[in-house]
Image (spheres, rainbow, N blue to C red):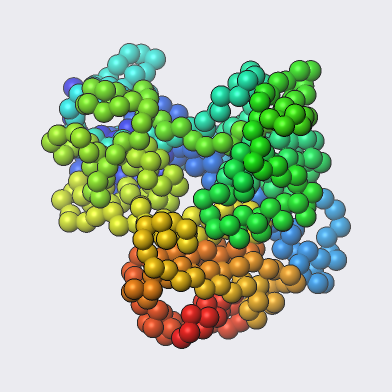
Length: 460
């Protein structure tokens, strides 16, 4: 039975980073992966979706700049855009990612990994089962999968999930998107800008991006409708059927929508249903509860860890990678704790306008009992924004804990506002007092000058 200090199940971003950092600490490490090293993000999520989004973003940005706008003379070259997407995913081949594991001296086992009791992992391959023993720790990093809602006929209608959408070989003329969260919104706008004549987004929630600030949702909806994307909110879907290549969806109010493809972006299902959790007293299919060391709670002995989507804390690639760094350091004996996965989660929805946020929304902060004050300023109302182009728009907001005069949440909307976010993340994590932030001087003329205006709005 092969023995290692650490065995990691799942070689997506969280798992491979945990394995690599454990190896850097001098621990012998194995990693088990049943699909592609690099996982969902590299091949069916962050990377290919942003590849599909980028051409439309560049055109939109150019159209905002007088003089440059006049140079646009034709539509997006869809074939070249899809070819670039293929390049970014390395044609769904992980040969370029595996050498990183080799360089770290991490042993890769290809197969389906399952716990089989304390510190034991079975790897199921076509050739049988190989059992690995972990001397120190087993790390679960199995991620999540797209969830299909229980809608009559949906499963038989051959719906797209994020995987089929990011692998698309052509742009559908008519696209129906079920779900108005980050994935649904990003891909809806991407395909509309790539050339879909009709795009309809349907969500049962009363607004798009329901977990973000209401003003962000309103701005994205207005942008969608301005580009010709139909948005239907507060709507249920009774049935979906495909016949002769046409998808027909019937809504609860009797409305019928026809499309050539239907994309389901209605949440994620944690990939914990077939990894042997029952052998260590945990419930399959559920989030693996963890403490601030990423140790699974309810498992004696302090040897089982869970990272990324499977622990349910923050289903975002960068947060999984952050947890991987914390976990590996804990396994190596360092005194370190996860301080960001609950109240300081940073996130970007790559629509146009982008929605970039960290920490708590105003509603979340009030629900937790904080006495908060919010301040806002137009993202496009600073000099740096006017240099970038005409009509950038957007809103910047800080949620401030009045008792401590520190930022506990921030949201920035507008084109390409993601680069404003890290400063906010630092301020939230460090609990930097506002009167100290006042001395962090933004360069002129940059969009980051909005920070100065926000602090002025607070009264500094």
